[in-house]
Length: 203
Image 1: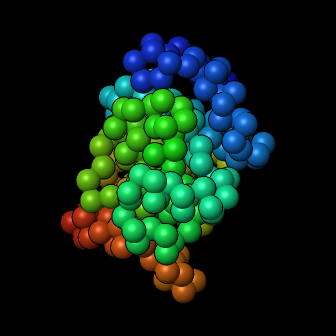
Image 2: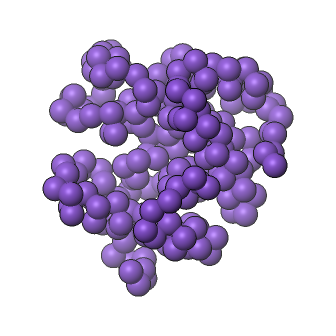
């Protein structure tokens, strides 16, 4: 059963239903269903870890807002918002978080930096992540439809320690990229260095 959070107007002028309507126009049905599962996972984690549930709901719903935009939109936004010029050399996997946050701010009127940072870092991670950013990072990784080797371990760790779970996801994402000869965004390496070596993670 989904938990419906009533928005206070502090972080978005929209009600949850209005926000969902706007998001639904940007995403295909499968992706739209995913963001709602991430929202519900984030709400549960927010309650466990003492994070504001309204922020978790909004961040969960908007984290993939820009995921299905054409590349040209992102490249235009990188120039328009004067973001790191190196971003043009990357792709949607990186853009939809780091650049997508700017589109959320401009198009949805969501200006809370805690929410926007959670969107920015939900795929790359970051050296410093707020509890909310950690929650969205993990909720996206472990939402109920996720099915990959290690997801149950990730879910267990998330229920025990957010920091340990972040280290686990970061390590296993890096391993996946290495094993598949993928390019690695520098911030992902920074995230690894900040979270994994001192984590006490066993595997």
